[in-house]
Length: 173
Image (cartoon, rainbow, N blue to C red):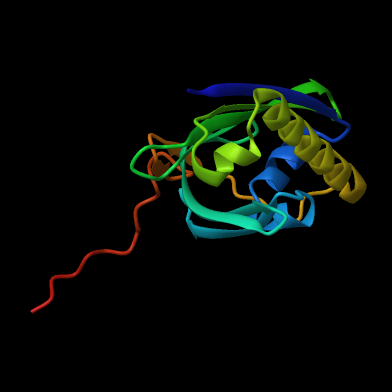
């Protein structure tokens, strides 16, 4: 059984600022009540600890697609992903952004008991998006940024063809 969740929020901050702050995963525990810790293992891999009350769960999430100011898509990195989704960023006006979270969750174990209904899961996502909105609107600027792209789980260079060295190559030997 899978549950699909989609929630959106309008934020009174430009899309670049909103996206830049979203890429600062380590800051999520500052405004998301269910996120206890996030570690950036690599540009495309994060380790999360989430929980409600005394219950905790740790998992790896792989970022499979990322396009600056547009999209971050992920999946849990377990043998059978128990959730996957994406966050899209769309400018609404010069200084407004619409953030939409789409998630597919396959409840299992205690996490399934916590999210025993699609209605509860939607409420958690909606509440956490509201916390993010308050956080970034209150700050007015991002605390950092990662502007790289990821395609099919692979980090792409920010420049298509990095410049080659102009230093002559001397034979050694």
